[in-house]
Amino acid sequence: MAPTKQAETRPVRVYLEQTERRTFAVAVDWPGWARAGRTPEAALDALAEYLPRYLAVVRAAGRRIPGTGSGGPEFSVVERVPGNATTTFGAPGVVPALDAARWSAETADQQAALVAACWQHLDAVAATAPAQLRKGPRGGGRDRDTIVRHVLDAEVAYARKIGLRVPAPGDPAQQDAFRADLLTTLHRSALPDTPWVPDTARAKGWPAAYASRRIGWHALDHAWEIQDRSDPPG
Image 1: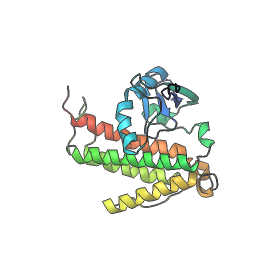
Image 2: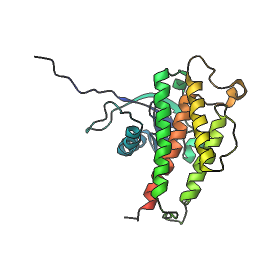
Image 3: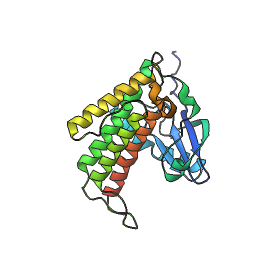
Image 4: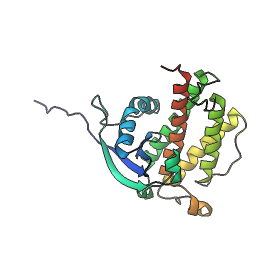
């Protein structure tokens, strides 16, 4: 009798970016999957809670996350880094030491596919959302088009962190070309036979792994915000 094939189980690698007031739990290998909480435990719980939403992005990229079955994800915390003011404010803001490692060509392809899927998800959500979104309890919050523009403007700033300097896109065609250039630059800068980032940007630059996660997180964080604020309160 042939041996029974066991289900593949592999903990999801996560690092924690911590301050006294907020912690981000960030999936190392899955750009866009990062959530925050007041404590490390709360951040990991939030990361698990958002897995079903993130899996839609993973499937759109033609990938799968091993070991994330009906029992929920198993996490392996591989690094803890002290956060900063950006962390406390509400965004991941520290490059972990593990990002010094280079990608294989296969990994670079996957990361690029996932970042592209994060953008596609944001675009799809925005295309069906109302222009005016439900306000917060104090009347705050951007509307749809302002959020979409904010994400794109941030990406222009992020691009500079990996040595790509371009003006802000002014129309959809320019936006598509910009994002294609950004993916190409990410892919190229991650491979072993190229510099980490161009020498002129090295002091303040980002490694490709961190840039991919930050870009993916920002796009999905606002996509999910648009989704949540498109619905009536309930």
